[in-house]
Image (cartoon, rainbow, N blue to C red; front, side, top):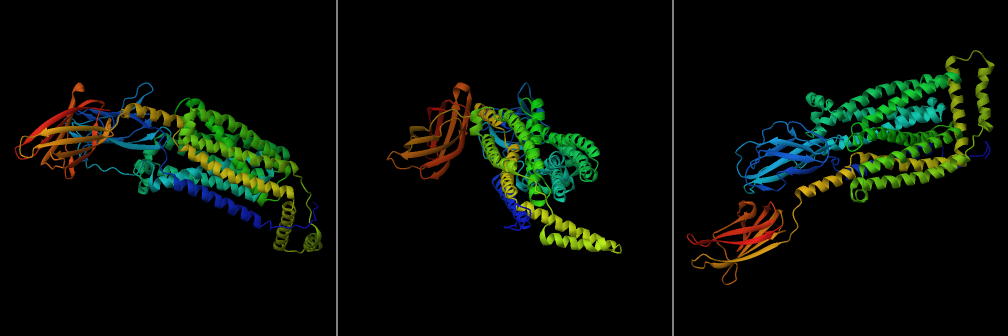
Length: 640
């Protein structure tokens, strides 16, 4: 197509606006769906067992309660609380003792002596080694289960409005990092002329501002995010000091310090470097900026590696540098893609050589991503069952599928890149004449005011830029490349969101191990509903009948109890008093009293009846039919 060919199609000014609007709508949709459908960040350390176990009934009060976890955690003074049936503290309120040994992570709290019978609630909250808050609760009983007035907060650790804002900041931080690092690398490696382009400067600076603001928000909200869940605690100096003493807090502060160095890098890149005209000096400065910028970028990436998944679990010393390489490759690819999109839509000067240079950078990034991604997948998933049966594995499959789609679209972009040519640009037709007329007063007179000369220079620059952009936008190869890159960017936005979700999801390997540990520690024995029928005779008037008892599901743990009493005529029979007791004589457990509530005529029920272990249980039933007539009958039942 010649330089003077007429341009048919949408205005080149409207196209960038439409593209920006499309991307903004896509970003809003993706993040809206993620935040609307996501609850609090999934726990990355999990409770694998306890002593006493959840739902257990013990004869005598234990001296302490211990909790075991799937990986390392950080605890504080109130991380483990034991509450009696009235809601008062039954533990000594001291900091939990670290009882870990070997590969087992265990903490315990001492209990007061002389605790009365009843049901006790254990509430715990801690910080996983990969920086995410975890919490939970369970109950056990001394002597026999009882009613309890304990009311625990229904909000999980890391949830509520504070959790939502913290998650938004996490997404924004990753996005800012990608734009900052990827945009800077694009200018230095692919298009050095972009250092003078205002749209490129704005892209990188906005990435820096986004990352800085998100890091500050995360640092301030870290205390309420892992604790109270109240925004007011963001400015609690004592809480902030405690955050600074943790690994995540140190990582956030380190990131802020590195962002100060990044600000200096940006000032040199878009200041001294952009104005440098001597080729040798610019080459030397490019090398210095590449080394310095690379160190800063790696340092910022390391602030994630040192405080999240890579810092805990198996082979942490290998996983952290691999994670840094993975993050840098993501930034170079996706950030460079965003930079190319801006350059194609908002600047008229980027040439085919720069586009081909980015194609090579993107290919290298994909190779690094593949190598590091395979290692990370093995480390975090560990088995095929975890890949398909855990949320982390399913998100990982989605991420791989998105990468495949992105590579397919990139193949089309690469084809358009191969067709690109750089067209010589010169003002044509009437615009050329107008430009010459605009310069005539300058050349004819030395008396033109400086203000008028500056105005004319700006007009000439606008006319030249508009004409260059019109010609480039009319190039079908360039238009095809823009559309292809826009499609890549759309997929990249979703890919970045899924990647961020992976960092807040419990790894598949950990989830499976925790489920296995929990099953071994607390799973009830297999069984089925237990039905008993026992005739009785209290010796008094209307003192004969039959007691029918159902235990459902008839296994260890919590059971629903139903008792029916039928008179000698087979009709429902009410009695003044009905009591039960359960005894496991082989283990010297019991009797465990159960007092059911009357539900209807001849029908009594009790929920949450705890069977602590499987065995041949003796069920004693006491029936009173008058003030003086009562009898106790018993029958053995295999439960569990």
